[in-house]
Length: 218
Ligand code: DC
Image (cartoon, rainbow, N blue to C red; front, side, top):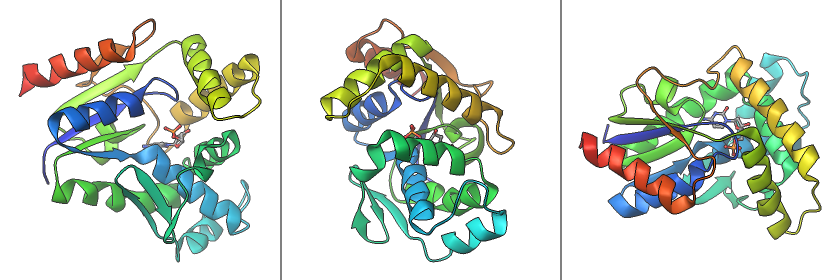
């Protein structure tokens, strides 16, 4: 296993932006594990699996699934689904199905294998607690629900989706609740993770804080 920088935090805290920038700055690979969960959510929906399906049904549908994250793109069964997984609906299914044990088991080795071939910046909900508990740097990146809703609204508007900020804020709160109260691998701040609150910070400032932490430890 190579060196891993693990970053966790809730939806919209800015993890992808900062993780990608750290990877570029340090020459590490970048792994967006939310993209893997989104692709698996898409696979399950396409396979006709509904939210109330049994674990056996979920596991059976996962059997033939192939998911890969390469150079910033996510591939499901050989097809690039990087755009398709970014809809609010795909985010909902990712959150719902990511609470299921067979889904987490399915993705565990895929995520760990990414750190076998190169140094890695991995971001998600359980990087610091479950997937890479021995990561040499652990960061918990957070921001207020209001600010995260504002950012997500602007992001979706820029992509051409008709969105309402109140609704997005409500969805973010529901997503936070589901991701942090589920029985398996809930989102939580690891005891040894350094906390960065990105509320009111620009991207450059968050990156500078993260790089200061990393350089202080290296
Ligand atoms: O980071 P994101 O919004 O793309 O993640 C989508 C969903 O995937 C999120 O609501 C929870 C789930 N997820 C997870 O459970 N564990 C991870 N390591 C990453 C994402």
